Amino acid sequence: MGIRDIYYSIEEKYYKALDKINEFIPVYAVVDPIDKIIPTFLLLCIIAVLAVAGIAIMLIPPIHTGSSQLVIIVKDADNKPVYNAKVDISGPTFNQRDLYTDNSGRLVFDVPTGETLEITARKNLYTPDTKSIMIESAEQTLQLTLKKEELPPEPVTIQFISPSGSKLQGTKINVHIECTSGNVQPGQKALDIGSGSGWTTALLAYLVGPKGKVMGLEIVPELVGTGQANIENLYSVILENNRTRIAPMSEIRQARREVVGLPEEAPYDRILVSAAARRVPKELIGQLKPDGVMIIPVGEEGKVQRIVRVHRKLDGEVETEEYPGFAFVPLR
Image (cartoon, rainbow, N blue to C red):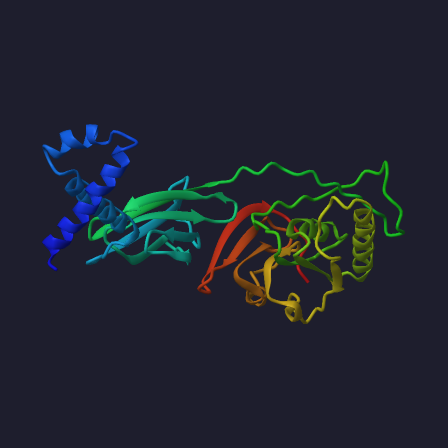
């Protein structure tokens, strides 16, 4: 039986079915006028073929015959490149996750021509940016812009305690507030060198949160005990207020004059130094994790000093920024 015979056989069954339906519903009132132009059975066959073809086009992924080079550039609101920004790419057949920009804020790779890709860039303390791009030419460039998040300040209560353990009330105290650009993040591990009364250690513990860890280091034996007592008092208060989330209780250790930092607990995400060194100690840089940051005063005693922000990049390169106009006790 050939294709024509099969067609006429099915067509005959089609009209027999219409005869039965017409006994209840006058379908021929609609079918007959159409049959005079084109057989309705043939018309239904054409519609069915087109429907199957349309479904196949939607379900079967396209076959790409080539690839294009896509250049992604991530910059901040000041048009400066954003280093180590995380980039995610999603498309019908091409997907990439956990890609990171280089020092120039760029990312280059090959993608299939004809794809429509959704690309998202994100980094801590920035608002993510998402854009879509249709890959049409041999080389295309897409720029994403990350804007700094405006985080509302959170109130922090500091309770000062005398060496005897009593709370200081109605007493005039000179307090040095040190603002850094260390960008301490939840879950990080931090070292506080020159912890003194322990209040900077406590602030770091608050910033890293319950999944982080903070170690304190102090050269003056009396301050080691005072600082640890203050920390313990702080945690006893926190236990009464379970709304405050903080790192496990910090330990303030006695610094050793022949050892720089606390290498046995290294590496650290953040190091805060509250005493001035004559130069940035290489030993402390070596105790930073990749992408770690250290804030340290540098300069001679009795002269105007500067705060140095040290960034150890993922590739091991060290980047510094300096902020002059400070005075600290010397690092011993």
